[in-house]
Length: 305
Ligand SMILES: [Zn+2]
Image (cartoon, protein in one colour):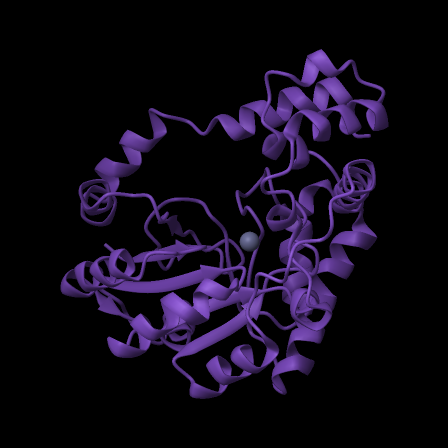
């Protein structure tokens, strides 16, 4: 079993260290360079595990990175250069804690949809059928109506990002500019989100960027072959999805699967996920994610704006 794991925000260092020790006890921890050689057919991997972290919020530097260093675990981190350059939060950080009834009211007005039709759905699912410029418009309107200021910056500093990059244990890759669901975007916007994130990140770090992860990341729902082509043309060699299965040398290198691990998971569930392999994947299929079912329904209700 070869696995790539995907973390986001981690706010409990003891939990993260316990999790890393558990993973390290069963797997050979590999770097992006090793994965690259594997996908080029130069080496074989058995019982390998690569750690990925998305977004680059401040907990990466404060909680995740010290544990990776202590245990000498290679990893890769996927970030938007826009967040760092402009010292702004991702839309999903900004909307956290908003009054979701008011957000839904704004969506209803902007899309000419009766507000009660949106009632059964979460604001997260509703946002994920929108183009990212519309999400920004909704958030701006919310702040105007409710006199809500922008939140303080919640992500790593540029100095921290560069320090992590230069120390070499963690490889940094692109993750778009505005964290859209790429599939919702026009050709032009999808191209901008990918190409600019790679170029701007390379400028920030002072060297080319070779890897990328898709926001949300389910093939066919969050991105398509259009995005894979753009990544290829931009010199990216490895791209990660969130399709939850073990990786193999038959994978498309622009759709490499990753298994998500969240903060709230107990050790028992985590052990099942890490060590049951295909059995866990079958268990997971019995419980399909409601998000994608809901998004199709929401799209029908509001149209594509
Ligand atoms: Zn993300």
